[in-house]
Amino acid sequence: MIPSLSELKAKGYGVLICGHGSRNKLAVEEFAQLAEGLRPKLSGIPVEHGYLEFARPILRDALDRLREQGVQRVLAVPAMLFAAGHAKNDIPSVLNTYSAEWNLPIDYGRELGVDRLMIAAAGARIRETLEAAPAVPLADTLLVVVGRGSSDPDANSNVAKVTRMLVEGFGFGWGETVYSGVTFPLVEPGLRHVVRLGFRRIVVFPYFLFSGVLVSRIRMHTDKVAADHPEIDFLSAPYLGDHPLVLDTFVERLEEVLGGEAVMNCSLCKYRAQVLGFEAEVGLAQASHHHHVEGLTEGCDLCERECTGACQPDGIPIPLGGHSHAHEHSHGHDHSHDHDHSHGHHPYPHAAHPLGPSTLGPTKTSGNGNATET
Image (cartoon, rainbow, N blue to C red; front, side, top):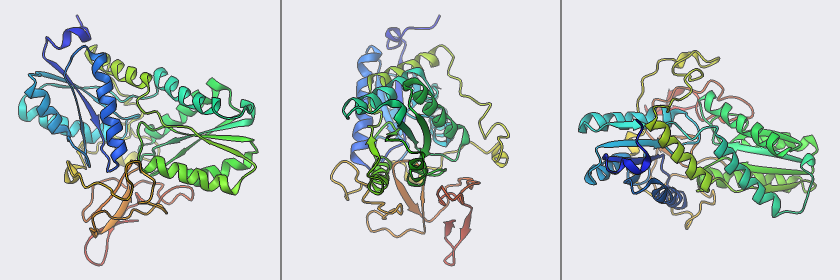
């Protein structure tokens, strides 16, 4: 018999919410608020949150805190919208290592994913934006959903599905999907394409959980295209944040773990199946590429609290703390970092696409012997 959430505390269960981490103060605060918002929904079960990098507590510290509270079994859920490298490799690698070291059972849930509650939360954010603006028929409105962007085509395709669910749910005249990094089309070139379709209004919705440099850059690129097209009404919708339906989705994921239903879609996983264009990545070892920045808390002081995108005015990161590094690349999440050794990321096959970035191309060695990326 599956224990109810109210029974879990007595059985020694604890919950770990696994985040990526950010140098952005507001993003870290928002993540902590989300974890805090889950506590009342979990009937007194110990809840901790931790990060892969660039913020504390790191995942290991959060697990230590759960053990100190007497937790004997952990239910871990990735605070990721879709399953790409972080949810499939980096987080499980950290959890598996800790579990083996401390003989602590850790049951890992699936990502938030394409889910009716998440679609409803996204719809609520878009509806807020529409209701605050002068009325324009939905048939004359184009919705642009901005995904984070990944080198995993399965995750990218899920953003497109979210777009279609929202477009068909509202009845928008048209819908397009663009990405903030790693894949294509990027935000600005994507918007410059859709303005040609002739819609009176374009709603740009960042399908993100939290604030950060990428959300700020989405707004910057939107404002830039809007300035060139004053005949079109551009609306920027807010990101998901800790909407109540997002919190309810986390609870669902925990219930799935308890019921043995936490199954990711492996049929389209590039690490398990020969997905068109990504055949070379089948069977790559599961490993975390973030150990060298785990717990690093060097914050960004270019912005007071909320990220303005000042660190990447033209998409090129400004190094923090005066450090000089050998190469620069964006991971498609809300920070960029530079260092003199490779993460082990497999080259993205479409890095040279005219509507995308060139940040995940094959690595090569520069004249000083350091790895660079093209």
